[in-house]
Length: 330
Image (cartoon, rainbow, N blue to C red; front, side, top):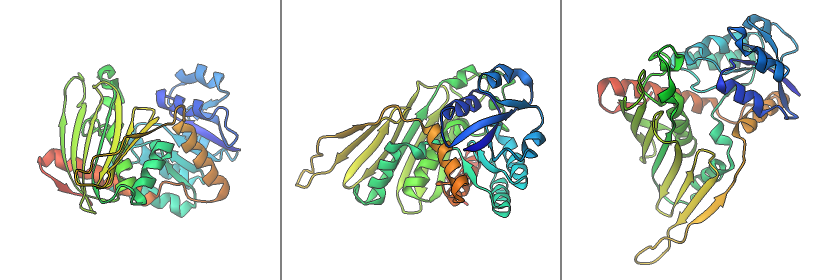
């Protein structure tokens, strides 16, 4: 059993804690927040609270630290935890700059500790199946990938909320949502060569809320991303190829549709093959994969090179929003 500390107990940190309350592989035993307002939650979940991160880092009984903290804090926190010999799991976005991302990876490698990033959608069986369809060539020549994810939490942001600050959440919905879609595209389509980004404020009072991207991949395929924090909640991730279309639908990612092309003059598509996978907990899956990597001395399943490339894409998005044109990645 891996004993972990959770740092940050906002709504997402609480979700992570609940996700492994019955796990046989990992359990949260300690918590650190800047104030003691989380005391009722800590008491309910048997967490020993401290207001000093050093208490966590200096405790030999703690194997790992999970950070669900403001984005700008990740770089320093990851480096400190790695230097203390703790395995590290950090929520997305991994880093806001490529320089920070490289320093974080280097710190983990020098310390010889596991470093994991919370791109939980990689672990869903629907995404695993879609990845297999792409990698096996069943979809034929890849033409484009289109992804969209929307939510409504941008409508609830207050002026003093950290997620409303441009320094924490640049480029509209990118840090909250878009980085998930970019990571999925890197996972199934490979490196991204260039990006053209547009950002708008449609309904949120205190922050840009909507982002649209046009991508060009190193393999020559194109991609489109739409994400918003003020639009009716939905999720779709679709890959189009010469032999078929595969798409994941809905925020729980429970539905996978596959439409195969048929031979013949008109190439009429075959009836859709629909698979339903309800009730899968992606947070449990990613945290248990983190625990397994620690216990077995192996790397976390998401390659750090792909994580770094995602930050390179993020930087290109920021350059594109400033320049108004397509920008190269890296």
